[in-house]
Amino acid sequence: MSVRIALAADHGGFRLKEEVISFLQENGIAYHDFGTYSEEAVDYPDFALLVAEAVRSGDYQLGILCCGTGIGVAIAANKVPGIRAALCHDTFSARASREHNDANILTMGQRVIGPGLAREIVRVWLASEFAGGRHARRVTKITEIEKKYGGCSGR
Ligand code: RB5
Image 1 (cartoon, protein in one colour):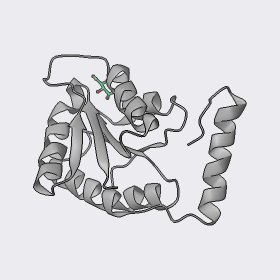
Image 2 (cartoon, rainbow, N blue to C red):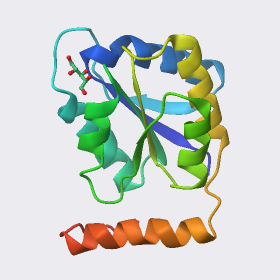
Image 3 (cartoon, rainbow, N blue to C red):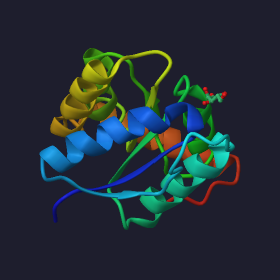
Image 4 (tube, protein in one colour):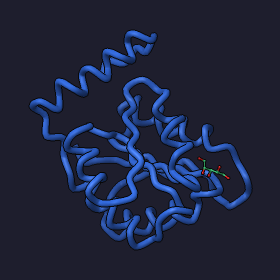
C-alpha cells in the first residue's frame, strides 16, 4: 500500500503547507489537504485534530502539520492516542523521529524555517523508516503511558 499523507495548517503555517503541497505534487505523493485554505486567522488545535484523527483512523499513514512555530500543532496532535507528532526543524531530527520514535506526524513552523529546508525535511522524513528493535520496546512504553491515562490506542 502506498503512503497517503494527511496535511493541514493554521493561518501561521498556511504558506509552508502550500510549499509542502508543491513538494508532494512534484514527487507524485498522494495527500489530502485538510485546510486551512487562506491566511485568515483560525485556531491551530482544530486543524491538528483533523490530521491526528485522519492518521489515527488508518485512512492516512502519515501526517504533516504546519503552524507558526510547529509547537502548537504538535502539542495538540499528541493528545490523540496513537499519535506521535514530532517537531523537526532539521533533517537529523526528521530522520531520527521516524527511525527511533516511529513518528506518524511531522510538524514544522513557518516562522522558524524557510521553504527550502522544509522541503528537505519532508523529503528525509518520508524516506526514513522505523528501525524497530530496541526502539519498538520504547515506543510500546509510550503507548502504555497513553493507556495508563485513558487513551485507547491499539496502534
Ligand atoms: C498563531 O499566531 C500561532 O500562535 C500558531 O501558528 C502557532 O505558532 C502556535 O503554536
